[in-house]
Image (cartoon, rainbow, N blue to C red):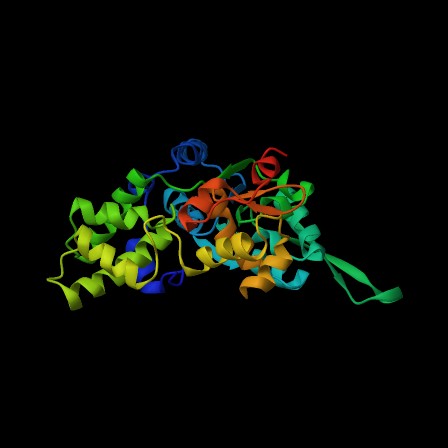
Length: 333
């Protein structure tokens, strides 16, 4: 699978700038339109918003659109960057009234910093402790009223106190093939790439329901079409290009198939723990959990049980391997 994050120029060129340009995620889009419309009508600051879901589905894009709709600046950071309370204080004090602070991977903020975020979100102030021991003292910093837009791929890792401070909590799901076709055609139009309907369908079918992956595939298929064809992306050209990337018709890449094959052959259908699986395939545990596993579960190839991960009959079918005896019993647990 190619890098799931497009370069900055490609990302900027293809990113929708308004709600009307954003395809898919209808429920989330409607909720955001209601909130931004009402806040604009009142002349008020937008309430805090939490976006969750797998990577590449448009959380950062929606944050930019919210900024456009509210006509406010969007300041972008990520959880791991905010290591100390002073880092958070520096960001918050540099905001202007109504600005939007977007924190990606907000579940990775250290707990000591998270506690300072509570008062910032509710009371728009932050108390910073200076020195330690008997000479310790704190100073109170008043900060402008701002909107926090948090994004997370691991909703379960957020603490209840932090979640409760978001007015809207909404999840982005994988896109349908029809929505991806629309996104692919729009992206190709912006890039000046000629693509027919069958070519767009072929890319959409292998994009794992993710616009970011679809846009990355477009970039490679475009190059392939220029080098190996007449520059037009057809079904045949797209299929050949994606086979070169080892992405099959199911959207499975080399690592996906390695995961499934290791579970089917090495463990003969027995439940496998995530740490064991990571060692067996030579991949980081968090990469399997955040990149590969969500799609495999969504598409019905993998199932979590109390004992561990197991394959479904659908996975054995695409591998061309018969399920071992007792597999059905595990699936019913």
